[in-house]
Length: 264
Image (cartoon, rainbow, N blue to C red; front, side, top):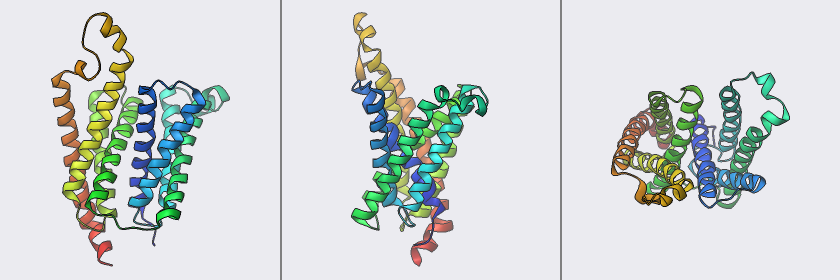
């Protein structure tokens, strides 16, 4: 099958989503071992790579491999930028160890997952249910990438993070629409919205779980009960907006590339 750049973009977000989903779950269950953490990162990347291979319109291995490599490079670059130092200063063992191992575990797991999925399943056309799962994990990855980029380049600005989430949602939607063999507009909206909502919910829940002891000592609510209703409403608005942007991207991707590719 021919090379698909759209599948590279989709793989980038899918591997990011799988990796950081594993990170959040590991943190929730109190896994503090450094090297066990890297194994969990690789496992999350592996899951994302398997899903990326299923969603790939091209060779199923090459595109996820490139997507994992781009994730590796972008995480290292974000680490350099966020450090406020030059790359030459960062390229020392103390400065690069965590960034390099984190990015490397994620990318290697993603590539391995794509390879295993190719060998086990080959190329299988996905239906609407499959694309819902793909876009949900992609939406989770959009939350990951948009938040990381917003923190690194936006200086903590909410507007910058919202803008980057919108850009990531648009690219994710374009990639999904161009990669699918059928129109998946509604599926893209729903999957992206649920995936992004899930990312922020897990992140907030993890934060509250980490500081739940302090709240319990003061006699306040803990866990999910500590999340105000306004937070849920705000997350729903953000997720819905991202879903709409992704839907627009999917419509453009399908009309420009997906429809003609599906007809061949």
